[in-house]
Image (cartoon, rainbow, N blue to C red):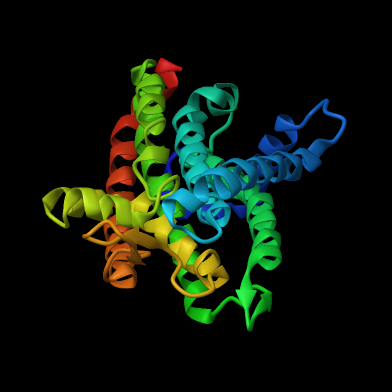
Amino acid sequence: MAPPSRTSGVLEVFRRRFLLRLLVRREIQARYAGTAFGLLWSYINPFTRFVTFYVVFGLLLGRGLGIQNFAIHLFAGMVLVNYFTESVTAGTRSLLSNRGVITKMAMPREMFPVASMLVSLWHAIPQLIILVVACVATGIWGGGPLWVPDVVGMAAALLGFVLVMVYGTAFGLMFSCINVLFRDFQRIVQTFINMIPFSVPMMYPYWISYDRFGGGIWHEIYISNPVAEAVQLIQRGFWYPTCDGPCAMMPNEAGTGSVPAPEFADHLYTRGFVMLAVGLVLLVVGQWVFARLEKSITERL
């Protein structure tokens, strides 16, 4: 006989889908408890954020960077960056935040980081809806304002979401256990999370990183960031179809004019699937780390 708390890892979490749904629903309701607008805030916040981006970056600064619909470029990346950062930070705190449940009930403890990732995905959906509305309003197709996505672009955006889900879950599994043993770890994670928005082609076009690094080793390190890959994939799905002609322009070598600039890194799709494979390996490693450390979780909580 096996003790009821013994699990087979992340797979056991999805076998207990009913309990997982209860945890996700509980976290969502707890976030908006006592508010007058409730879940409507999930739409108000991203809408006001997009309007700010459109005015400040799209109208005031976008033209200087040579990017069409720069607000869409920025907000598309922001959707996945917010999803990743919230997933990792919430996953890191998930065991400590649910200490009362963990010490009283026998359940797969991997359920808490996975639930945090799904709650973060729920919060990303309103941002995605705002992004679609913005693309329809600002896109250009056939000489008129219309956003027409293509199958390849939507598949790229989906791959970007899957990358964030896999890496967010893997880091959440590893970091949640470490955070129980070393309580300062969540602050260390937050410090590095703050760097994420500046390490991806979101607030600036991809061609700037390529131009500065000259396509050398530092450029390869830069585009090896899975979040940077995910951001480019969602931009391929939502920002790229809104362009009329070249999406990005860069100064020519003589500095007297502009020439079309690369919108994305080479081998975007191949690189995405390679990073997905690496992420799945990292998920297995995260499960192994969790299994090794979870024996001391209860007594440290």
